[in-house]
Length: 131
Image (cartoon, rainbow, N blue to C red; front, side):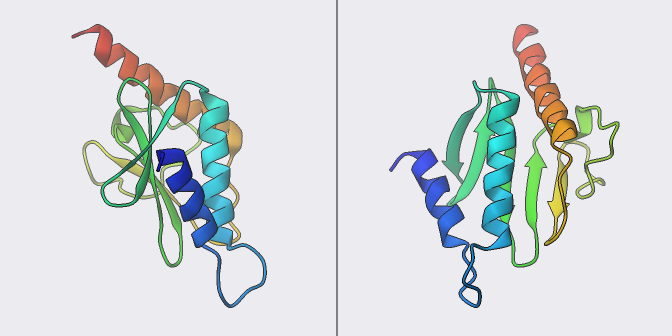
């Protein structure tokens, strides 16, 4: 199965059996995915670490995880990226990774997230050009 198909299955599988509508976590993950591809159509989807959606462009950009009470989008080089709109709200203590945790009812700033994704791509391209 292709990584994009596995991510599709994950999103559908996040449905809450106690509700008739799709789970907010599935909707949030689908929204993250759309924003990521809108920010950079050359981003490649992958499926790693026994079930983690990943996106890369000349290196890993971010991974997503749906937890019981949140959806987490973690940037592999988040500590090196500008975050003027303060999207990062988790993983701030490390020297490399930074994350965005969203809970039910939260709304992501799409413009800021697209900017963050483009900065991550630029970071990867800059690292590649110095090698």
